[in-house]
Length: 192
Image 1: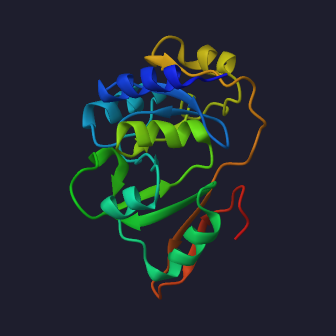
Image 2 (image 1 turned 45 degrees about the vertical axis):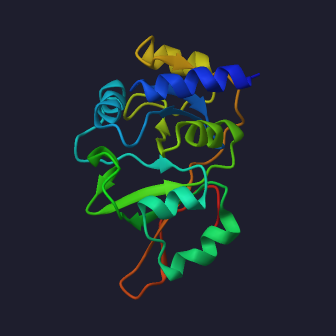
């Protein structure tokens, strides 16, 4: 349902600091350029999310992740097995490209999505994208564009409609503990 032309249009919206509703492997999400502070704040305003919470991001590939974050040895094996997929890792940030809206205590929550549209948006932009559920904070997660439009109306700049998504649990979130071992923060679609 989503064409290459749709992806190009969405990438142009992201480049211009806009917000795009897009499908992920778990639900519909809100995307913005994770290196553009104004775009990230626009997502925060649309969701009505607290300033203290950072947004997770999707990167196109491992090369992009290694440009923004370090992957501790204790998580490298999980990355090889579960990426692309619904596994979010909390990693130490390197470099200064990322907006502070996606960084918390020197870390970023990042994944390589198994959804082709998610990957294409990040790859086309040449940067990680914010990836947070397309709903108001505290409201139900959306698996259809109709649900997103009911909650967010015309606040997002563009909608990419992939039809009704199959409801899936959110991504599993892992970090490393004080000893360098993987620690599950949230058990989601991937069991660890």
